Image (cartoon, rainbow over all chains, first blue to last red; front, side):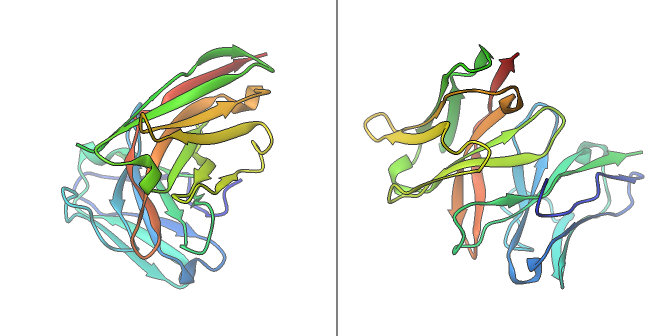
Length: 108
Length: 119
């Protein structure tokens, strides 16, 4: 089982805002990263270090962190955002990454 | 262009062995941490093994003693030797490059190599 807890699924209508959470013990002190994974494809990082976006990722994707919960927010959701989203932590002092169980985002 | 390309997956009987390869281009595997991550059908991501740039290696408890991570600097390739395979090892195996910001995240992933262990 995953150390990080994510809801199995989130559904949202096009144009609305999707929020996907990631919780875990002591996550408040860790940097959280988020990956988007479409069917049959490898994961792609969409937010790193809690709230930074790699180049090429739309501003609609944002991350935040409060207490023991990190949140990936997708604004103005589009059909193309439908995918699985995974959170991940890996502190410099740790020897391995930890992943959440993944959340399937469905665009209604 | 920075790229990772896996190969070596396939269908194997329980108890058998496979070696996965991950050919890197655009950077040196010996100068970076590298990791193998797997995803069982319909499941989330699970870390399998990490090799640090200095050569130290780490394994998930589920594969410790059965899998071995290694690298060949002459052909810039990362490997995962998998022995005593179990049905529960069935998954897509990704190699990925951890990037160090405030913490590590994987900025480059291969497309994955499918391993199916038959009973």
